[in-house]
Image (cartoon, rainbow, N blue to C red; front, side, top):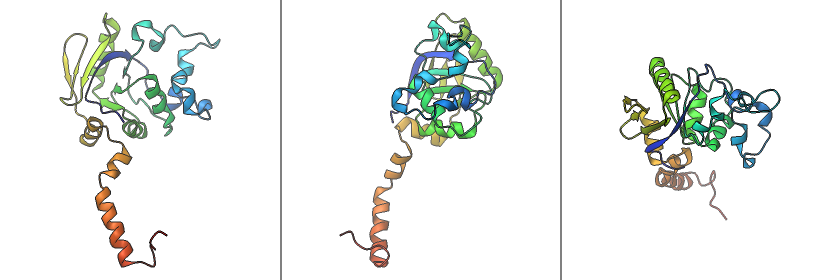
Amino acid sequence: MDPLTRLAAVAVPLDLLNVNTDQIFPARFIKKPRGVGYAQFAFHDLRRNRDGSPNPDFALNADRFAGAQILVGNSNFGCGSSREGAVYTLQDTGFRILIAPSFGDIFAANCLKNGVLTIALPDATVATLRDALVAADNPALTVDLESQQILTPDGDTIAFEADPFQRDCLLKGLNEIDLSLAFEAEMTAFETAYRSRFPWLAPADR
């Protein structure tokens, strides 16, 4: 996956509590292959009125937040089921960074596996950040993962602390397979020794 070191991008505020994975990616779309483009399903039922028309009150429908790569949410973002499709949907929409007071544990783990950074900050800090984005002429943030700092539209700096393992993986662009391959030499040595010690259990390839 692509490394994430520093991102300056439009940020969209989403002031909704307990946004769950079914709201991010409704269950009825799970049967769809990802190749159709999951971005079209992002927050599908929240973004649309009952007649299918765009909901003008939903932030992601506003032109000023078009192309957002950073989402600033509210508490318990990504709660609910362990639906990895929710992360695929956000990723396909273009999001690389999510900021909120708290996240669903499984959702946050799935974010890391797919190269999406989750940043947890105090409620008051995140609320102020959402308000700043609403008021800003240019609703953009700069997130520097190396220095662990966020530059706000007002020019203020907010420090954050990423999990060291998450930070290292994202900075280097490593997923779980990449991490495993880092031990390829050790695994090969183990397999060789194992075949030598127990040849009847691990016969040589023919």
